[in-house]
Image 1 (cartoon, rainbow, N blue to C red):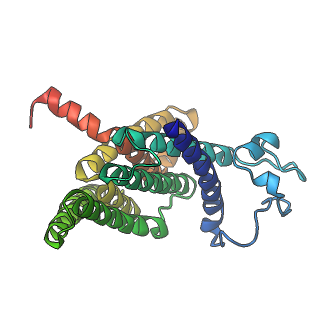
Image 2: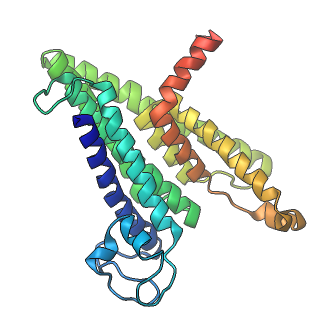
Image 3: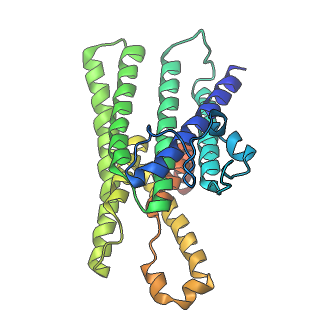
Length: 302
């Protein structure tokens, strides 16, 4: 019962944060504030009533059009709210997989760790969806998201080390120092540096061969973010998944008559690689470790 309630609450809150993400995606590229002015129709400028700002329901109720001028409201508004809501609901459900005995009357190490990881995962997923949307629409991975995201990974690593020290091993300062150093240095720092280093190497080799930039620094910062949150192995897995997804999209584009007819347009076409990597990051956040463990068992390599 509690697991169901937490899942529903997380999903509803995810819909609300997805609605705010839509505001960010619409206003940040134009250099506008996400606070003022109030939500309004981008076509006629009319300020929206409160009931026109209800996540998911308002878009469906209005039929995807402005109530006044009938201008279309992009499908992105619907899909972003839905995707964030579903991801947050799933993250809320997964909290209880880590601590099945979790209840309102129990707060121990397992509960604290599960809640910390669950809330952290929700923030991480919001960042990835936001970066994917901005990259798809603007080929832009803003530092205002990637750099704080890397820093939040450090905060999470430090928090987990502190929980281990104080709730699991008695609170000794020496133990805290050791565990925080392990979580921060071995997991966050190495994860961020190694993951970014892999893409920097690819960027350097591509530039050496093609004499042009093929991978942006925004993608490198995104890999550092993934490595800090997920560790180097899952971050590289996300990169591989993103590369496969990008290849599939490229082949589909190449199959269109317009692209086949204009080779120069195809050569100049830029794909949102950061968005593909972000999708891979979502995949790795939920199933990366299980997939790596299954591969290790199947291959017997290590």
